[in-house]
Image 1 (cartoon, rainbow, N blue to C red):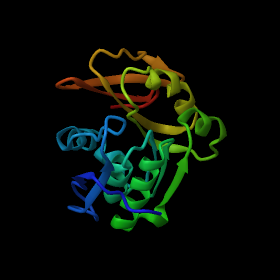
Image 2 (image 1 turned 45 degrees about the horizontal axis):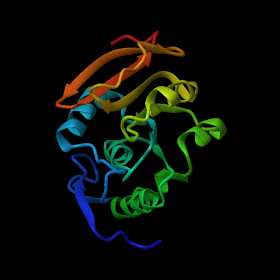
Image 3 (image 1 turned 135 degrees about the horizontal axis):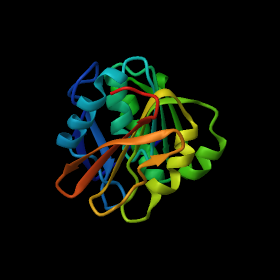
Length: 191
């Protein structure tokens, strides 16, 4: 596995890997979640993380799944079709010491969803914007989720998502400038 060169740096915000630097490939295809948005997301789901099995779909650098592992998630699965993203995920997992708690799949999200055997408590969806990918994969992701689970989606502000999908309901949408974070929960869940 070659190391990435010409990268931007991010960091793990808190937990066992707090302060560790993460790398991400430069360019428009990988758009890391800003620290402010990441902190907000993890404040929203903080009590659901310990012991959780996490899916980081469209993983990019893997920062969301790694942050969850740092905060006590049991395991994380990282899926991305870009070779540079997979290199970044593996490099970041190695740097944070979480490689033993991770599964990394270099494939398209839809292909993974059709073949996945694992079930998840938390899923992060942050694909490239303006391609309608979140709405396209939400039903497949919902089928892989356990009871009392959460799906967190990041989109551009003008992208519309359904109010419900499978047994999930859109509970809240948060706005951070031109970014929206949508939080879906199982319908039977209580806030």
